[in-house]
Image (cartoon, rainbow, N blue to C red; front, top):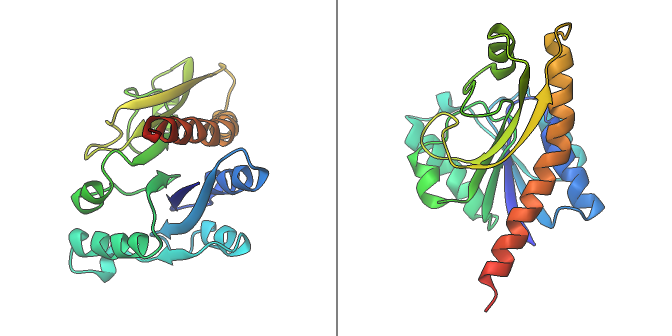
Length: 195
């Protein structure tokens, strides 16, 4: 069973979907920790209700990004975390965490990368008049949504769609796809590690 940490900054709907997948037995993982950078984020309550440890701290409380990330790494190591899952974490992962968890950090992004990276991907897609968007699950590197792509799912954008309509459809797909893709990744790793 893969020991994972989930990083989130907001309401935590993807975090909740992962918790439910673990509880249902469709995601063979043990969520050891929620890492959050927003003390008022609703995801913290979700973690509490799921009886999952959380670590919440703001980078402003530290001398620099390295010190902030060193504290996170310490929290991860103390719980034997092997793999990091970003689920609406609105902060770039820096060198300190990347070096500790090489090729062991994934992110979900609400667009078909490389289109519309960064903040407000749905707004970017609508502003560009895109007829198709979706989601991308990718490995995390030092760039903004630039890591190797693992999986993508397309979502149609209709001419009368509001931003909320598109966001809801993408989130519904995210809640299904993320756990499924993670399970495939973990199964593949286990198979490759077998003698």
